[in-house]
Image 1 (spheres, rainbow, N blue to C red):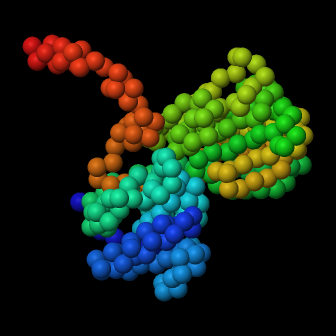
Image 2: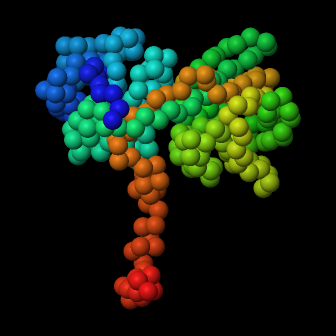
Image 3: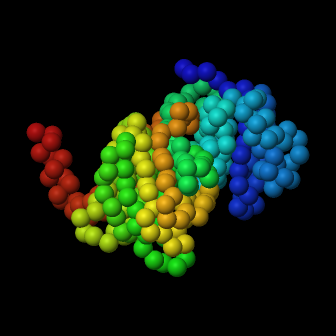
Length: 307
């Protein structure tokens, strides 16, 4: 059994009264189990709780576990803020799909009771360290857990860029843009752009073109030990996004450098967590097949296996 958690931080984005109710109920539940509860200061203001309000720096210094109530966007923000402190995070899904928030809302207290008692698995996820260089100077440096994206702006014109891997020229492409996704981000924007799903244990990044102006451009996966460089050749009103949270305008001549960050995010999962079961549920794999199989065919197949 893993170590138990005694000091727990709660983080949530105020989307509805239901989120506030869930956070208050969770705080009461954890205190009843003898846990010290910290509430992230903006979260505390939003739900009207002042006791034990804490900044991310205070959470990083004091908490053993951070529980994030909301959707994947809330989890992204919390993970990016806590990665430097090494505080593990677990998500309660009160959003939509919730690829990173794998504790169900209806099972919140039971699952988190098990987790704080030491019944859980711990997983590390890699991040992207991103840097925009302009005229030899760094104009932005940030982290991304899901993806780094360069794309066209409001004017809707194609951008043109060169791609380099470890200093080696790969191609020049005209397109709406390109996504560089971590395994965590491979089920986010990159999936919508027909990119591959990367298992979290795979040490790779996915490069996914957005509406390329050629039929031959396809997604490609590269080692996460690589240095990826995107050099803007032609860009009118182009932008770079990092997890959809950090945003920067980019111009022709800018160089976006992407590499794996040294420090990973630590995710806590319930002991029953199964990555492929999660994919089956979220992406509804096998559902149509199971629904459409005739009863007689199913019985026949079972009979053959029995023999």
